Length: 428
Ligand code: GDP
Ligand code: IMO
Ligand code: MG
Image (cartoon, rainbow, N blue to C red; front, side, top):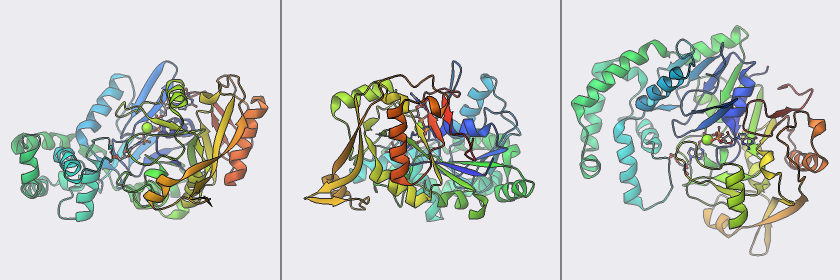
């Protein structure tokens, strides 16, 4: 099993959780490197559904160590709730969960600051309201950020908290009725005690593990088109969701990475604001949302659905240097007579084959579609590539050739065993 990065190649919710869980069977370590509890990664085993927000998707595999890197922002309140829920359901969470001392904390005031920023700017990003943006802003600002290591030096934490409450006083008094500092200090002291046994120096741990021949999966959150640099800014999240974040979010060098697996649905979805060039017409949008159960795993908001956008996916392939692709939720298209794929954009009579950086240009783009025949049969029982119907194989081959990337994993349903692995590929 090569050290493999699993990252979203679209606007998030591509099934990174399921993909990670499957590959984690053969991995020693699963490490998250960016994002926070804005993520919602679903894993279905038999009749049981688990939605993980902060804990890496290797937690359901015994013998896998799960690491939360310095690039992740941690809300301790939701973190401990997630741990308690997992334990109540019989999942072991203890020594198998390690947290970077350098990770930054999402504090209760960050959520309030997020509402404040939204009010002030009038920009409808449609965030998950988890305080992600304000936390990463404070990290970059340097004066305000609070790290796990600071929490463990409680006097330092107290000083940093004082600074933040003072600096943010006006906004906090305007929204949400302010913050009870003494209650917060008590709560965070208890958290520090509970957190301490999990805290490690992640670069030391991961680099030592690799020296010892352990295999690592690097689990991304969100997706390439939500990247702070490469996504549809400002309708993005506040972290780098693309390949570089693996190194900066964990403290490993680029040579630690053997394979870069992009995860893409056989169509696209987007939750929150921002342009979405291949949006389906309302009846089809509704059909795909119902069949694919396209409602946010974190916020339950309906996801917008669209045809597969190969202009955007090619862009994601280039930025991340994808070495392979997992194509998921292909079964959701089972009923369709025709399947469209966007191969270029048209704007003012001009054809564009690259993804524009300007939002106003993107908003004027009309997709150019290639139309393909559907397979009109259920794929949910298929387990071998040879058993896929010809039209499904044609669809997969078309995508693979367009992107010049192999597709060794095809997901045909939400459950762990609903997967087709291409024989002979390194990930099989
Ligand atoms: P993630 O954020 O990338 O981990 O993806 P989410 O968990 O937010 O969204 C993926 C959704 O699709 C979840 O509800 C999964 O249970 C479901 N799912 C995953 N793979 C498949 C598949 O191949 N077919 C179908 N029908 N559903 C799937
Ligand atoms: P997973 O890991 C889909 C979207 C939000 C919003 C934008 C900014 O499950 O794929 P934020 O709260 O991050 O500041 O919101 O990003 N978003 C996601 N969309 N899947 C996610 O995570 C997302 N995390 C954030 O809807 O548009
Ligand atoms: Mg999700």
